[in-house]
Image (tube, rainbow, N blue to C red; front, top):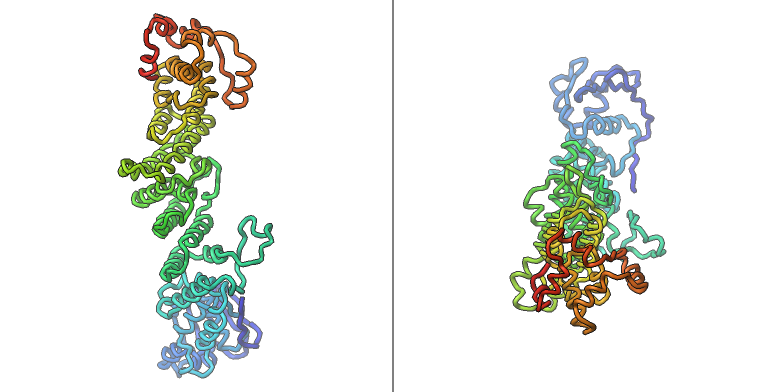
Length: 543
């Protein structure tokens, strides 16, 4: 970073109570009041260089002392003191961090060449254009410092010049990037890659206040030369920087009580970032969108923002991973570990275009649909195993939301149902039937059909379906024979198969025992099956 040193005299200012006094043999005759601070100075040094003070002191030339109030000086006491020290020839050090306030204060005091040659304001302007704007980090720091003096900096053109300088550097080819920049992305140093990455600028820009960041990104996008993916990466870095819980995988991250000021600040970040996401599909990752919509609900973002986020997330749900969907619940009761409603809303948004165009039988659309079906079934299995409070109604609703055509295989769905039954052994017979309503045993692999036959957790009608389709595919023996054999001991091969599938032990009982557990009396299922002349009829009746 660049610095400028002006003046050679030592600093002899000291503080006494609420006053700043200069050690000198000459009596003070100029008193400057800025809010609660009083400066004891001399007209001889300040009036020749400050056009404003010259005008204010004109009517008091013969007075022993003059008192002037400058409460509205931009930059306050710090900026004024820099200007005062310049008038006394005291050494001052200027850099991007304090240049902007000094520029505004010197302009306010009218310290121009027309008042006295070699004045402060033109010196600062020269340093600003020749050094600060040529540097990358200097431009960032200078732009950030304009936030407190927005109106003054806007009128003096400082903001626009800083933004133009930053955008010019962002759009430069990476081969020409030679200035210092911050890049701490994980894995970059490990690769020992010394070439400049395309997103080299994103971390430094993320230090800007929200409005300034928006101005920089908007200006960069208006050039139409920056790829949407780079815009998306900048938004991702900024969100991680200013939303402290964005990268957290902890389920307690949403339980931290925040004051209203913090929530409002985070709400503005979410609303602004969402409005800046490029329309191009894939400009931001699906994981980013899902995480952002989860946080949007927490911070109370507008309905428009949440609706737009869900729409964007739905458009590329087929790009999501299982980890992307495992979003922490924001329920005030803390009973549910994962936000199942959010996943259901995004799935519904994803399915809307398919429902409109499914008659076209687009292979690309069908491929995406099948990817999402596998993802949802894997999600149901993961949530069932980790969230003991997952309501059956939510499981069923999410499972049945996937169209039949989307599932080429029901293996993942079966595993999810089996896991839910394992974690919730207390559910009733009717609830089990409802749970298995969307399961099609004809679409199970041979291994899982064999497992279903011996799985006591499954309702008996589902077992009958598995037996029937297993019989049709293998053509081995009658249906009744297989049912009776189910009551006998498991072979070692079956135990090995279940261990391999990670489905847990499938307990076996006699058909008579299964009757008392599943049906609770009356005519046994075995008798119903045996008395039926058409076993296919039982299969068609469903679970």
